[in-house]
Figure (cartoon, rainbow, N blue to C red):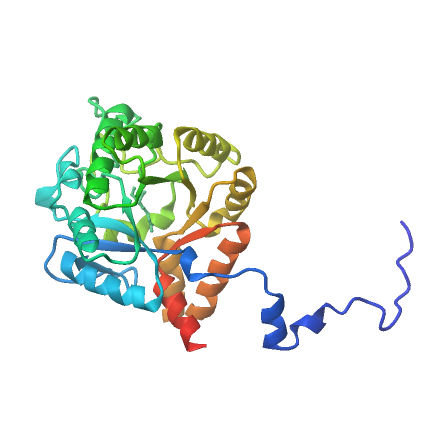
Amino acid sequence: MADLPAHRPGLHRRLRRLRATEGLRLAVADVTIPRHCLIYPIFVSDNQQTTPVASMPGVQQWPVAAALEQMRQWIDLGLTSFLLFGVTPGPRKNATGDYALSPDCPVNRLLALAREADLPATLIADACFCEYTDHGHCGILTADAADPMVVDNDRTLEQLGRLAVAQAKAGAEIIAPSGMMDGGVAAIRAALDAAGFAGTAIMGYSVKYCSSFYGPFREAGGCTLEHSADRPTHRRAYQMDYRRSREWRSELEADIAEGADIVMVKPALCYLDVIRQVRDACCLPVAAYQVSGEYAMLHAASQRGWLDLKQTALESTYAIRRAGADLVISYFAPQILQWRMAE
Ligand code: PBG
């Protein structure tokens, strides 16, 4: 081994020079969180009351009219895009999730109201059935209850096409299918084009892992998987396995070939390596979804005084941007803007 060079006092690099003041630190910071890159997920509900989500402090299920009022406030704060999820009580759910297609379901009503009010925001509709099926899976079940595939992919595609058209009609500018059906983007593109919505964009949940960090969302969206003796109570037969390190490329290629306008990686913090690889592998805008569990764990630790909420939320969001996400879907979105204003 070569000898180490002799230490020459003063001749080492002084990287600390540019860390001396906040002005210098800001001047050389190349990762930013512009407000336009933030997408705020909201839960709009059939219930009459605004209901807090216990596992996600600050997150509520909003009745439609209240959601519209709230959106005006978030827009005043600087938010520009919203991802809409629907919450509906048991009686309106069925095996095929038909209520999602109705102009009366909360998401479609909110879209229509927002359009009527000319709300200056980009509205993205979640296109999945788990909030509307009585069994809680993301699509129509296979005829054989013991079928390990659980969800009938191709029957669900037909229903997905109808859902996208209903949401585009109601006023969605972007359709975001979160159910991980193979061919989902193609089915939605074909249905939208045939119905005269060639201008409606698709944000593919291209690389979505089967993650336990979705736990709190299931409470927020009212889509816990019903316990069943003969049916899996997990989504491993359609969401991705995080033990595979290269499968993202196949999912990404499929969504791009099918016509996705934006691709997504979900969750975010445990998958920064995947965000970076997806960013480098394509030139479409890449979104990353910082999911409910990522939000809940920072809140839980900060409530105990173990972590600083603001600092850890910002550090996480900067990490997601540094990994290469153009768009960040985050429950912290309004707070990030509030924290910034307070600075
Ligand atoms: C439903 C859906 C889920 C999320 C978004 N859409 C749950 C799931 O796939 O089980 C999770 C979002 C979050 O955890 O914040 N298809």
